[in-house]
Amino acid sequence: MNPHVLFWIPAALRLAFIWIGSAVLWYFFGPIIGLLAGLVFTTAITVSQLYYLSELDIWLDSPRSERLPNGWGAWHAVYAHLYRLNRNEERGKKDLTEWLTRFREAMSFLPDGVAIMDNVQFLEWCNPMAEKHLGLNLERDQDMRITNLVRNPEFIDYIILGRYDKPLEMTFNDRRLVLQIIPFENRRQILVTHDKTESVRIEKIRRDFIANASHELRTPLTVINGFLEVALSQPDMDRETRLSHLQMMKEQGERMQSLVENMLVLTNLESTDYPLKREEFDVHLLIRQIVQAGQAISNGQHTISLELDGPQTLYGSMDEIRTAFTNLVTNAIRYTPEGGSITVKWAVTEEGPRFSVRDTGIGIEPQHIPRLTQRFYLVDKSRSRKERGTGLGLAIVRHALLRHDAQLDIESEPGKGSEFSAQFTNRILLP
Ligand code: ADP
Image (cartoon, rainbow, N blue to C red):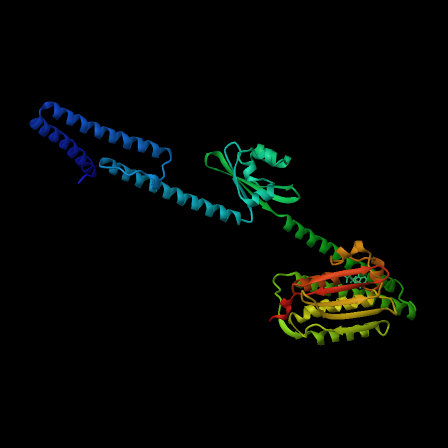
């Protein structure tokens, strides 16, 4: 049956009841009583209708389902209908709000910035990464023109010219950004920002590395070529001069070899395709071997002492730790004049085990210390060349340690000596 018929039945019954009741009263008590009763009943019904109408009017001011009034008769049906409609709308709104919250959450995890602009390039919304890249603040900058917010001539030209087929690359707030505008419905636009500062930095490091490496290799090659030319142009050179030239060529060849070896080690350490091979090893034995090798290099010119108080077993790459520790010990020997002393210590600290090498050598001026671990960085080029330094040793140490969550601490005083320490965390003690 049509539900609207049910809606009419109680109302019709009520009216019929009033008319019949009034007619009965008219019959028994005369027309005045009958008419009066009819008037009273219809007034009561009209007042009740007005009451429900005013309740509805009040509810419409703030239409929340739980505050919907209770009705009687046809009003009950009307209120029930309104309740269902309102409930559905509330549910729809809740779903939409939840979906929007999830969408914003997902957008906040994007590594790129996203901003939405209306047809006249006023900012409608942006994610936190766009705020970071473009120095925006959504709360403060919403509904403002993007060209007033991102004050960069290249960006403003890009927007004014409207040639969005190609992205724009620009430097903004010390970041190298790539921006792309994508028009969509109703001439609104999405602005996507990508930060390539890090990749530009890595590219520069790579270029510098190649330039430095070529430069470092060219020097010994030039020396070798020079000697070879002399040897070719003077076939009758006396034996002594020839031997001295050969000796110098050999030294340059060795220098090239150690450069290439160090470059390979460093490249391997930096490569993400070269995972850390963790193994259990006896670090006391390793340090003793390194100190023994150091004594052989020093050849009795230094007093080398050893204090082994730290843990005996470590879990890490023994080869990489050997390379790092050996570099620190050989540096101490190379940069400590004859008669100096070197102390190698393996100790425990609150943070974890610590390997340190203290020497009474030439020391380092404070301004050089932060740059010592950069590739090819030499404090005193002429001295290091003589010592056959490549400027790669400490870069290798830093990378090998980083791969073991350890850091290199450097303390030094010119003329007094230096202490280079590898501070590990306790993680190195666990398999
Ligand atoms: P190199 O192969 O030239 O020694 P490193 O990267 O090992 O390269 O060291 C970089 C620079 O740090 C060296 O040129 C040297 O000046 C300085 N240095 C390293 N260790 C010491 C030390 N124990 N005492 C003084 N200077 C040092």
